[in-house]
Structure formats: C-alpha cells, structure tokens
Amino acid sequence: MDALLKGEQAVLGAVLLDPAQLDRLSWLTPADFYRPAHQALFAAMRTINVTERPTREADGTVPMSWLTGTVTEAGHHVRGLSASYAHTLIAACPRPKNAPVYGRMVLEGAIHRTVTEHAVRLEHVARVDAEQQQVDGVLHHADVLAGVLGDLARRWGTEPRPLAPAPTAAGLAQATPSPVAPAQAEDEQFLLAVLVSQPAAMAEVYDWLRPGDFAEPGNGQVYRCLGALHHRGEPIDEVTALWEVQRRGLLTDGTLSHEQLDSVFGGPGAGSAEWLGDRVIRSSVVRTAAGAATTIRSLAENEAMAPGRLIGQALHALGPLDEVRARWRTANGCPSPGTDKAGPAEPSDPAARVHAALARSSPRPATAKAGPATAPLARSGTAPHRRTSPSFHPRSTP
Image (cartoon, rainbow, N blue to C red; front, side, top):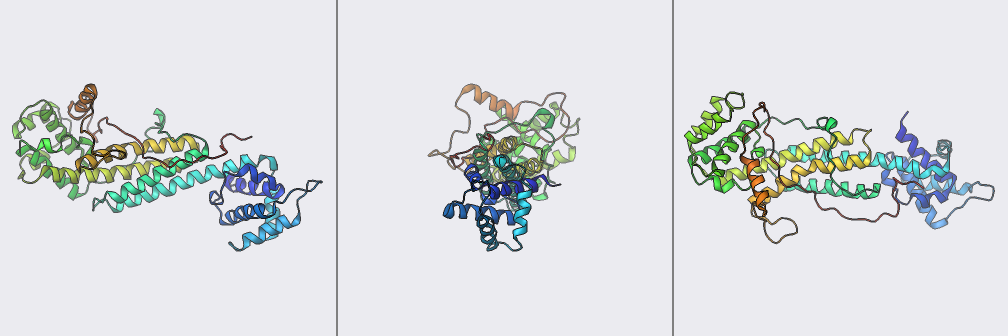
C-alpha cells in the first residue's frame, strides 16, 4: 500500500466532501501532487472554488455540481477521469477535518521528490563538465538547488539553516570518490614540479589552493609538505621537499610511492603555477559539486528523513562547495557576492590566520592511516535564497 497515494486521495476526498477545506490548504499547490490526475483535480478545485464558492448544504451534503464540475474541469487537462473516481477519492478520506494533515503528507512527498530532482540534475551537470572543467554551469545549478532548499524550508515552516548529520549517520550518505582522470593527475604533478623547481612559485597559489583540492590524495599530501616549508619560511627544492615527505611518514605508511615522487621531483618544472593551480581548483569545484549532489540525492531518497532535517542536511552538504567556490573566485580575482572586490586571502583576525595556516601546513596525526586527504577547516556558507512569507506552516496543523 502506497502511503503517499493514500494521502493524495484523502486530501482530495476531503475537499470534495467539504470545499471549505481549501481555505486551510492555501499553502498546497497542484504541483505538490505526484500523480498528474491529482494535480489536475486539485487545480480544478481551486479554480471552481474561486468562481463559484460552493458550500455544504444544511444537511452536510455538497452540490452534485461541485463533483461533476471538478471532474469536467480536470478532464480538460488529463484523460481518463470519471465521476466514479471522485467517489473513490471520497471513500479514501476518513475525516474531512483532517485535510491539513493529509496535505502535509503530500507536501512532504513533494519536498523529497523536488530535492531529488534538483540533486540529480546537479550531479549530471557536474559529471558532464568534469573533463572540460566548466565551473559556471555547475555553480548555477548549485545555486538553483540552494534556492529551492530555502523555498522548501519556508514552505515547511522552518528556517533554511545547515544541519550537520548525526555522528552515527555521518558516513551513511557519503559520496564515493570518482576515479582520478589521467589529465587531472598530470595537471597536479606538473603543478607540484613547478612549485619544487621554481622558488617563488608557491606564493602564486598558497593563498587559495588547499591540499584537499587535489584529486589524487598523494599529490595533496605533497602539496601540504610544500605549504609547510613555505609557511615556516624555509627554502623549497628537491632535497627539502623530500625530507619533509619523509619526516611525515608518507612513504612508510603507503600514502606515496617512490615512483610518484620521481614523477614530481624529476619533472621538467616548467610552466605557470598560477595557471596550473587554477586548473586544479576548477576540478575541485566540479568534483565537490558532484559529491554534494550525490550526498543530497541519497538523503532525499531516504523516505524516513523528516523534511526539516533533509533540508538542513542538504544545505550542510553544500557548505564545502561554497568554501571552494570562494577560493576559486579569489584565484580569478572575482569579487565575492555582496562585495566590490575580492576579499583578503587570509582572515583579518590574527588567530584565524594562524588557524588557517596550520590547517594547510600542520603534520598529520601520528595515528592517521593512508587515505584521501582531509580538507582543511575553512569558511563555509550557503547561497542566498529568495524569501517568501507563507500564511500557514504545514508542520503546525490546527
């Protein structure tokens, strides 16, 4: 038995039995219904209610014209409707006064369905644009998703605030890392070779490129080593870089192999660090968007997830994308939203600057095992949303 189908039938049956229930369902729209026939019927009810304002008779019955008119009006937009289905809807409604509760069930299903659709769209765009490193389209669809989440939150009666998942469920909806494309690995190795062979190159990318931006975890750890040398004001060359790699145990714990180091330290080291770094962070933007979309889709497909928690955790999943987007804008000299120019690369507060520097360059804990590089702590936020003012919050039924 499909609970959502029963909920849609019950709310439509409640309105057929008592047209006045439409006044208690002003927050529900035809698009919230999953089945096209139900969308057409609810739209027809709203149309007829505006023009005719049908009411119940003294004995509690409704005019037959209310039922037949609704079916006729809906039949102009969808085929297969008959008067007998109207009686099926009426039979599916236990109590007309519970119409807001049935409507809340319909809205809850619509929220899950809408979030899933937009997450799938973002995931598809990110996968398609991964090789071309097209960032604008990915960010546009991410902003659309964030705006949809904001609108849905306000319709549900909550504030659109990021909500971290419970510790026991934090790993249930994590995206599986995609295989690293050969072109991505080459860009990262070329960049590291330039940073090792050109003493001044690190300053071109240090302010906005992070170890977590590297698709290959080993390359990210090499970059962390170079960042540590730069942060301490020590020279960067093949000898100092190899020493930093060795003292962090990256060779002994299997994070790096000698072949990987040879490809980095034995490379030509020619090119622009800024240009290569931009390619790396572009890939990071697209990859982060794809991971966030996969996580959000997994959350939305969980029918047991309450709408408020779904929206909050989905906004939380978009946080890393907002952070890497801000650094990509800094790398390209673009002003952040709401400002006239790009913000400073480092936080203005001295303690925050130290924290950001340590996130880039501090050694990993001794108990850490080989695996994907952990993204450093950084600023995060959510995209701006449009504001609406619903007159009714479905979470609070009368």
